[in-house]
Amino acid sequence: QVQLVESGGGLVQPGGSLTLSCAASGRTFIPYAMGWFRQAPGKEREIVASITWRSRITNYADSVKGRFTISRDNAKNTVYLQMMNLKPEDTAVYYCAAGTIPGQYDVWGQGTQVTVSS
Image (cartoon, rainbow, N blue to C red; front, side):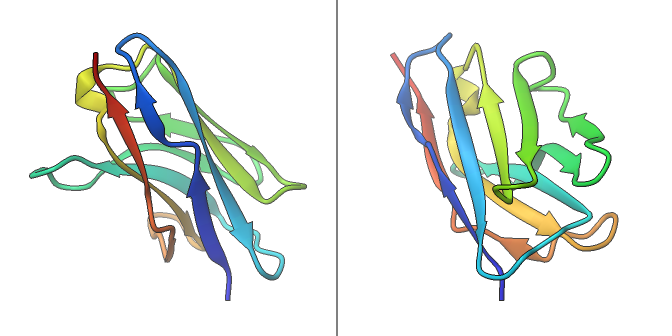
């Protein structure tokens, strides 16, 4: 089965930037959409961005619009999340997920920690 592996998390100062990567390992995997989710301590998991694989239609949570950019590389089976002007409230574990049909995410990565602090 396909596995998703996130990377690129770390510590960054407010106003800084960070780019997360999510690589699909194993056999060829063409999802309908891939998304980035995050979960902060004591908070529910929320979706922050998604992208359809074929048409590259993107959606963003209001809290990250204008600051985050999701993109994909078909050849590498990889999705990226470019995060700019990071804020302390962006601190969370970020998860990559893939869905085979609209509205569903079936495959999840293990997460990568993003900490925004002075």
